[in-house]
Amino acid sequence: MNDLEEIKNRLDIVDVISGYIKLEKAGANYKANCPFHDEKTPSFMVSPSKQIWHCFGCAQGGDIFEFVKRIEGVEFYDALKILAEKAGVKLKSYNKSNLKDRTERQKISEVLEQALKFFEYYIHNSKKGTRTKEYLVKRGFSEELIKEWRIGYAPDSFDKLSKFLESRGYNKMIIEKAGLSFLKVNQELCDRFRSRIIFPFFGINSELIGFTGRIFEKDDFAKYLNTPSTILYDKSRALFGIDKAKVEIRKKDQCILVEGNVDCILAHSAGTKNVIAVSGTALTDMHLRIIKRYTLNLVFAFDMDSAGAKATERAIDLARSMEFNVSVLDLGKEKDPADVILKQGKDSWIKIVDKAEDIMDFYFRKAFLGKDINNVFDKKKIAEELLPQIKKLNNSIEQAHFIQKLARKLMVREEDLRKEFSKVRVDKVEKKEIIEIKDNLSQKEKIEKKFLKLYLINKIDVKEILYLFSPKYRDILEKIAKGEEIEDKGFLSEMFFGADKEKQLLRENEVTASEEIKNCIKNLKRIFLEEKKKNLSLKIKNEKDPKVIERLMEEYLNLIK
Image (cartoon, rainbow, N blue to C red; front, side):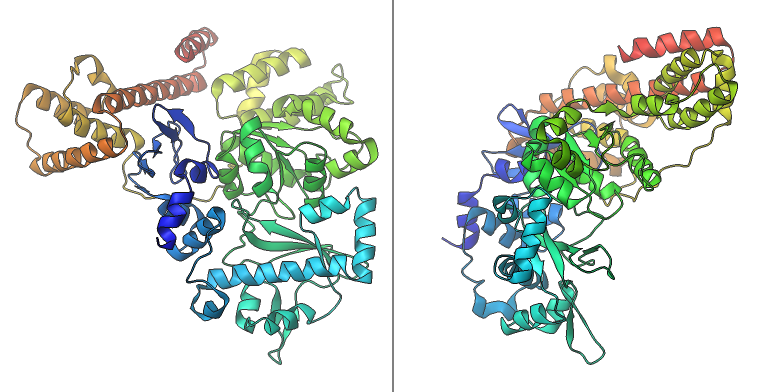
């Protein structure tokens, strides 16, 4: 039996994929929102019996190796190594003597592991390491916690780590590319991490990707230092603690986001294991896309009143723009979760977590704090603070709800508040474009094309659903139903060829054509309603007559129901 067969025998595709995304049972199979393109209705299917996955939305699919390749963004051999470690398989072709034949990614992964063992040795076996542990104990760490999170110490030396790694057979280029050292003018290596407490960074699959170093007993250096960008470490994607927190995040359907490594580790030790940290960098849309695989409920445990409050607000705005349900924790007089746990105890921290406050409720409470609503200037300040937050809401109904609420609390006319609201301008949240396969088709067109292919396999009565289709596809569908000739022969050939492919996919995924047709109709109805909701929202936004607005809003609410 070769390495591939042994790995496949030991690993179940459901276990592997559920380590990355949230799967739901769907008959004999599992389904999820596809992690490779944006979608709201699950079209990603996993077949335990066939040990394959397929997305009916972007037409991608394969086995566990193909999935890990795509989601980790790695070559086949790196995916093989990740899965071999997960399966406990020692790859026959990857022993120490074959170091020069390995991929750069594998070499960097190995050199990082050697570096971590070096840091761990120094925290447990040196005088400075002993002082480091004494400091950590004062911050609430136990010996077990230090070992569990593999915290280390980088000695105060320019080249101890580099010399150690070179003695283990790693060349200067790989050590530098791993972000552990940099080359000086004389072409000698200089260690990047010196006199620092080392917190290792692990990826989703518990693979070591980099380090954060906190300065210790030195004052003339930056407090925190992260690994620079490498093949493995990308600060816009790296989330500290995600390897330990992902299962609990999915289980609790909630993710608590903290700012620092110490906050994250102590929060875990206090019993809240659904906590991760951004660790010294701004929250990005890529961070949020990773979190979105596990939950849409995000709780910020940041210091909301600090100098970085603007950056925190931008992070919250980004999360809201990506449709997260956002809440915040009121840390009281403490500046971070670590202080709460250390000074007030674990029970106080748990109580704070249980009282997570919806973001709009938080903004309202904060805006009214210390203000006199009978004072016209205070009323103006409150409105100036809250109207931009209301403007950021994507839904017209939500906006209307909070405008009404603000008008009641300020004891002013809603019409006057709406006039001020119309003057508010907010910056759009910038998001990086997601990398996906682009075919210039809208989601609706994709579903319409798929329906046509399925219709050729299993014809049904389409009279009652023709209104769901765009004119082009409605015309083609009507002609096929009536047996009339279609002018675009090329398109028809494409549909017949696609129908054959669909048949094969249906067999592989143990799904019937009628089930998929129902799914297409359901999705087309959803899109039809979304379009109707958008049109109504636009009408509400542009309408001036209060009576007409009231009628349109009632129509909108009925549509939601």
